[in-house]
Image (tube, rainbow, N blue to C red; front, top):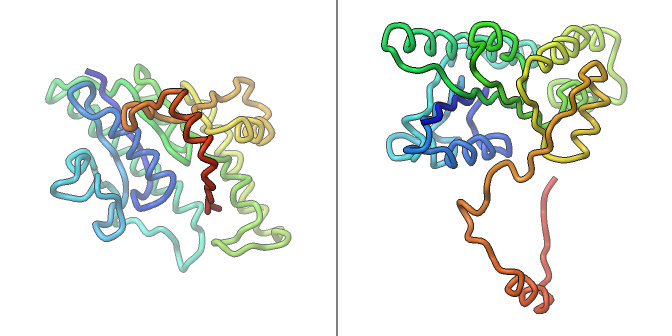
Length: 239
């Protein structure tokens, strides 16, 4: 049995959360043992799979650090995200080591770190035999470079630049500790290379991130062509 632990800051509703739930659902027992560590999982704002008591993944969700605020006076979101993520990481390590040495349970085989790479150095140092998969949706240093607490700015101030400097350096340092880094497209792969030139090992493009045939029966080539011949119009609304 493969033991997989996920670290995700807030388990609400969104693309990143959907990906984590899809990955975890694909690993449900008996093939694997799954745990999802998060600081928040609001029953009124989460996917059905993690809603207690009947959600398929409800018993796999471990909430740690819910008392930590997301902001301080509606500011310092990035710093608080790192603090909350590090607290979550310590909880993962303490639980894993306690269960291993006092309950004789095996350590996690794989830990999947999502969005922020902050957990990677600690996990690498204290759980050296556990593989670390970092899924980088997009480099944080580029994702927030023109926003301040969600508000778009034309040019960041000097104070803002000084605020981001250690965070951007920390992001690059932490990312290097992943066993493997995955991204969702060649575009993100190229952006990753531009953001972190010191990281010489390119990330792996993982698309789709799960085996879709496990959820959706495959369609034959003839059926696909027949559907195309019907000339249906498809409209896609997204960001």
